[in-house]
Image (cartoon, rainbow, N blue to C red; front, top):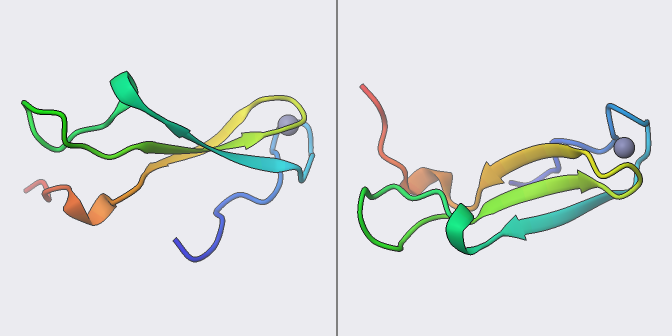
Amino acid sequence: MKQKPITKCQYCGSEDIGEGWQHGEGLVTFQYHGLRGNRLKYLICRNCGAVLYQCVAEPHRFPQTK
Ligand SMILES: [Zn+2]
């Protein structure tokens, strides 16, 4: 991702956006079994705490659906 998809909070209007990662149990995996998976990345408003955006770290590793 070259550019942040979110630069401003849609709820409070703040432009103070923080970045966070969800670890452990929150992993989004592309395998039914096993621990390999992608961390969820979050963009969070540092003013009001709203989660503005979330995505996985390596989306290209997920299989396409037909
Ligand atoms: Zn906000």
